Amino acid sequence: MTNTPTPSGSVDATKVQPIQRVSDDDLYRHSSQYRMWSFTPEQLAQKRVEINARAATVLETRVRSFLEQNPDLGSDEVAAITEKAVPVTADEEVLLVNYFARMLLTFATKMNLPTEVAATAVTFFRRFYLNNSVMDIVPKEIFYTTLFFACKSENFFIGIDSFAKKTKSKNEDVLKYEFRLLESLQFTLMNHHPFKALHGFFLDIQNILQGKVDLNYMGQVYTNCKKTIMEAILTDVVYFYSPPQITLAALLKEDEALAMRYLDLKFANEDSPGVLHLETLRTVIVACKDTMSANAVPSKEQATRTVAKIHFGQNPLSVVERMRRQRESASPP
Amino acid sequence: MLRNEYTKEKRVGEGTYAVVYLGTKQSNNRKIAIKEIKTSGFKDGLDMSAIREVKYLQEMNHVNVIELVDVFMAQNNLNLVLEFLPADLEMIIKDQSILFTPADIKSWLLMTLRGVHHCHRNFILHRDLKPNNLLLGPDGQLKLADFGLARNLGSPQDLLTSNVVTRWYRAPELLFGARHYTGAIDMWSVGVIFAELMLRIPYLPGKDDVDQIDVTFRALGTPTDKDWPEISTFSAYNKIQFYPPPSRDELRKRFIAATENALYLMSGMLSLNPHKRWDSIKALTSQYFVELPEPTTPEELPKLGGK
Image (cartoon, rainbow over all chains, first blue to last red; front, side):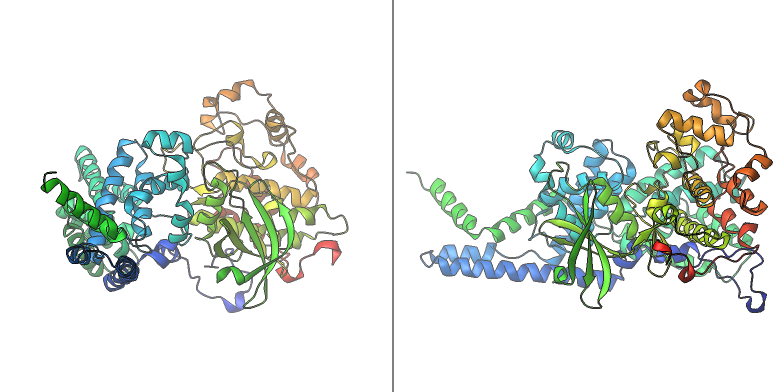
């Protein structure tokens, strides 16, 4: 990263070296988003399994010691606890996180926050759960914290009083886990969302396909692609692909013919072949598009079930209390 | 575990939102500076300046930008571990016992521009460049520091605040209250710093914000809508005094030791119209850096106390 433009007609003519320019790709590879938050699907899956297993062990230990401390529980009660107070699975975690991430996006949109702030909030929220389990801190507890912190990080400051008022929450609840959040984000806050890439491609397409595309139509394409990207940041493609790749995948989904015509012409004009490989790029963005489309939207019922499961796991006593309540209401006094 | 890795040995400074300590990284005995961000008394949680500093320094890894060695939490405080940089350019400029050669000035300017170029190609605006924020390592390397005001180069429609950059180094578009601006504001600051290096006194020392406009245009001429067509859209423009631009001869007299190429570069960075102002690439590839003398190697640059 130390390469900078060398003065033209460099001083020492005896050892002229070809100037190695730092490319945009080089710069992206130095970003924290690439260094720390990009994974292969295997790495990501393993990360999630590990986070889940660690929290599951803690939970099981806690349930065991609860049972030991309460030897007077009935056998049916012990059975209920053993059945209900169990850890959630790694898959349930992912679905729950994505469910709340989607809620966060909806909420941010309702608050009229800028797109970048909303996208950052979602990104922070999802990254938080790559280092924490929903069994450690339930999504509800970090929901507003992420949004508040995203506002600050994206230079869209909202004071805590007015934020708390707007979100109908308490100051101290919003701020409670702010440090934990920053720490879980591994102190990296810069986000490169695909929206800038979209704007760039949008301009470049008009340039490359000058006179061959209808501007009104392009406006429609832009709006739809933006929606697709909003959906994409809720999926794992953000961990596997770079922002321009995600953008091209969105374009591919919107109008495959347009995307391909643009790329063909773009590469035909490219005067440095070998730098970019059209075929490779095509394979990458098709794969990205498929991953994007394969994303399952978690249902509310699923989410509610998982939240209840976490609650029982964290409070085995509540299983017993619930049973006793049910028993009481079943038998008349 | 991490917190024992760094020792805080001496308190060296205190700002509005941080206390700075000198210390040592235990595992390799490296001297470091620790910026401990105050957290109590900030009702809005983590301070914006601290967030910006962490956010931008994490993305940059360049010999002319201060290195963020580590970040950690201890006793509910945020600690930024930075590389240890014992001096800054302001101290050097003010040290009367030091004589600058044109080669020294060229070296400091080159390192400043390289750092700025690295920020700008990462789409980061520093927004507070001044000699006091250009720190000097024991090896003579100059490093951009204090990213507490930095931000991303926004989208074209974003509204930015014009209340940035320490007054004397503030570009004319900021003086007029522009809500849209680019890296050109940093380039202006570099131009003013270049002038200060040659003069050894601040070049445009306005007493207040109004005076700054007067001082700036008295030195460089009041822009007209011929050289800056959008200028009349700023409401403050109609109220200001008109000064003719300085002739090349006047500039030569003010900057006696400067070569023509040096003056050309300085004037390029001090173009009143931000659209015409030189960017970091144009500045770095200017003839000034090609002509003799070659810039002094960092190790041989003058140090504090004339050593």
